[in-house]
Length: 283
Image 1 (cartoon, rainbow, N blue to C red):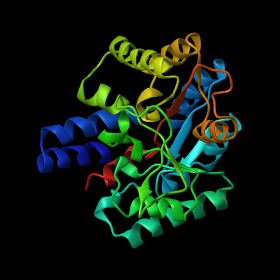
Image 2: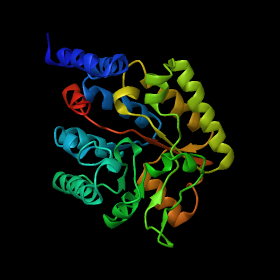
Image 3: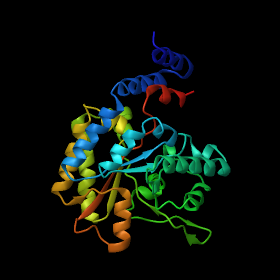
């Protein structure tokens, strides 16, 4: 019996059927090499002259620096997803600041440019926004997941102590791949239907829409077709698919979407490259 299978059985006894099912699903997903997963995603976006932004856990990034450079060379973007994949509301403000700082130091050593941040689990407390500002991030891609922010159609700022903080936030659509695949068990056709419908609605607002489509799922051979259909549909109806940083900088400097009808931001968190790292998060 492999160590991975033994650990799944341990989780089943300790935390029940739901945890076992999710762990086994992730075990199967991780059997696809991450290099192939990223290749699948990059092949799609490159064919449409689109881009993708990958918020990445820094301790994970250290395992495959060449893969991250491949992403950047493909005119896509890496962002900070913490040093470790830990829920920020469960740790102190000092620990949050230390986690962000360690992550930034890793990417500096790797010479990977990073301008944006998304907290693990899209989980923030009242301390997090000011720490994001302190580390001089241009944008944050997780605050927009809060229920009160998902319906927004443009960049926005967090207001604290009577002033707007410096960084930009982006509304994050609720149609994440983990919800559609893991919870709702949508087929490729159902996923495509719901995502393209969201694009059609975004076109009406002429604003910005952002999706969180994790590489570990959307890059799988059986799901990458969803990404292809999404970008194909968006291209036909006038969507621009830049990196998050390019979108923010363009909106600041030009005030529009470079002649496109609206902006769609494709993002996907890289939490771990190996199943052994995933199961450590469940202990």
